[in-house]
Image (cartoon, rainbow, N blue to C red; front, side, top):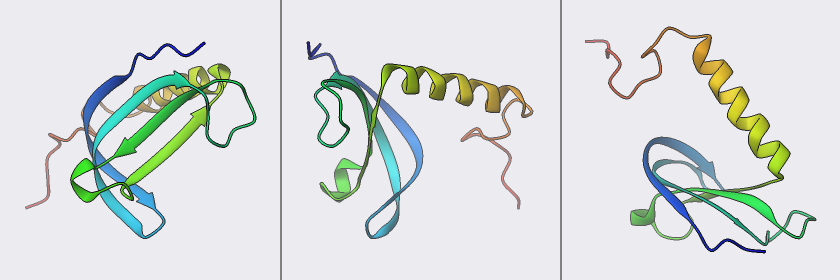
Length: 94
């Protein structure tokens, strides 16, 4: 069953699409039917920049287990680094 609930967040980063890297400004997460993954439903994550049009999108279709493992890996990677090291507010070289 599709939840029809989409979580949207503003983000700062870069993604690599068919034509190379582009700035990311938004992420959307929802449970729905995948376009490609061989499952009835997946956790779908879209990283995009709406100002650049439909081609500025990186899509993930994950199983529930894969999505939870990704969350754990993200938390683990962040916990192993000094706080603020990868923050958008980190100190920039002069």
